[in-house]
Image (cartoon, rainbow, N blue to C red):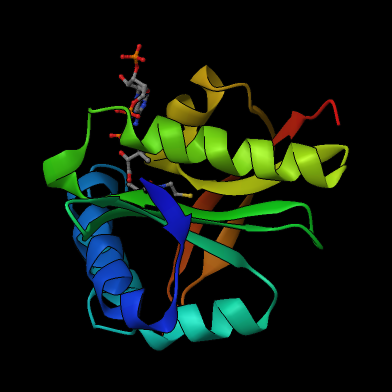
Amino acid sequence: MIREANASDYDAMDNVFRVSAKAFCSRSYACQVIASWAGEPWPDRFLKSKESGDEQYVFTLEGKVVCFGSVNLGSHKLVSLFVSPEHSGKSIGQSMLEFLVARAESSGIPALKLDSSLNAVSFYERHGFTEIGRSMYRTKNGVEMESVQMEQKLCP
Ligand SMILES: CC(C)(COP(=O)(O)OP(=O)(O)OC[C@H]1O[C@@H](n2cnc3c(N)ncnc32)[C@H](O)[C@@H]1OP(=O)(O)O)[C@@H](O)C(=O)NCCC(=O)NCCS
């Protein structure tokens, strides 16, 4: 089930982020880049994200957080989507993506944008997003990662 995240989920969300980034993004980025981005626990990233206006949601199975996603309706952006590797390939990422797109659509915004890591570009393409640009994302430790800007037009 998908529900709104709360502060008591932040440790579990941080864990999903770090194992997912290591498992999936290691195919597209060097080890040092992944270590800088996801090497250390940092659950407060979600407090900062909440304070910046991100809506945060978790997908739980038997009470355990296996995926999280967030959307910022003010900036028209899907901010994050991560699935635990042990639960990938079971349509959980797709369900969360559809939930976030529906949330954006119901808010009346004309398009939803996102910055995708290289490994997830074809996942988003399969679900209606198109590439609109490329740029470098700087991690909190100053390491740069290539990211792909994507967009999906919405029909509010
Ligand atoms: C990308 C990610 C969210 C997919 O989640 P998932 O739960 O494993 O994917 P699903 O089971 O919902 O897959 C749905 C469909 O997309 C396809 N798909 C999944 N990951 C894909 C990928 N990386 N590239 C292309 N297609 C992909 C599946 O084959 C499936 O297709 P089907 O409906 O024809 O069977 C997950 O792999 C992940 O968390 N990756 C690491 C984090 C990340 O890169 N997030 C994006 C950064 S913004």
